[in-house]
Figure 1: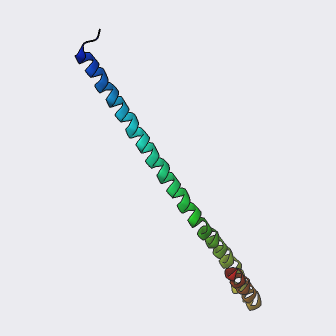
Figure 2: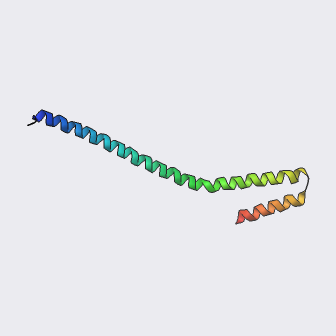
Figure 3: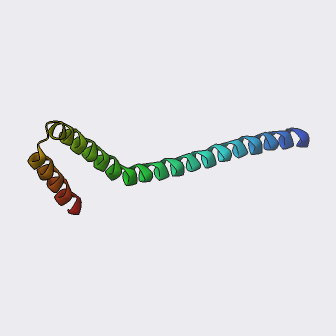
Length: 87
């Protein structure tokens, strides 16, 4: 039959292991929450990046006509972009 001291030591060791497991689970839960928050933020920012890419495309399309002094094409591109912006 185990002595009372040995049982107490085993119980203390078990509590220590359980506490470590709980800390890891809590840390995992916090990590999952943080990842979910970051994913939500990326979904929010994604349309901004798409719009920025569209603006960059417009600037690139405008550079050549402006350099060639093609005002009709510049006006058409600006109108096209303005219409898309309203949509």
